Image (cartoon, rainbow, N blue to C red; front, side, top):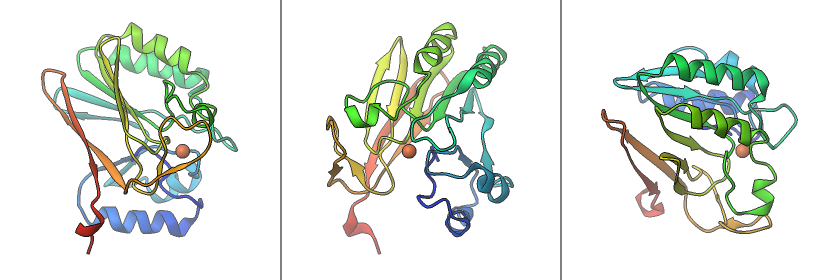
Length: 206
Ligand SMILES: [Fe+2]
């Protein structure tokens, strides 16, 4: 869950999220988005099957849950401490394939208003990624649209929103008429990522 789990920062919102997701009896990894309240997340999502931040291992893979949350801001930043911690984690996990999950986009989406609320320290983030050859992918939310690009052999992907979508390439805020969507990823043991976006067909809803 790459952030903006709720829109209204409400306790009831997180309680509902918890109730809906725990029914699947699967681990749920969460990071805060600009609309989240990390204090409430710490209180309501810190016990299994939920995990906020940190990392997790799946076979040959290490998943890093990187916070880009900045209180009172729609833009994000990792900050000096977070960047140092990321560099240290990537050194520690240098014999595993790594997927980094975050909320804010670390590369521009080509949409002026959205890129104004992207990741402020993207340059520092990318220079760290460039130093660690086992980083295979970076995935984020926030931009309410799908994208999948490659940069220096690393896959950079955004996922659509489970709510409404933003119109790609628009310089001003505008909604797209696509339905809710999600991105699934299969992490292959040789480091490859197989991924696809699923758009929810309203006709399938019951
Ligand atoms: Fe966001």
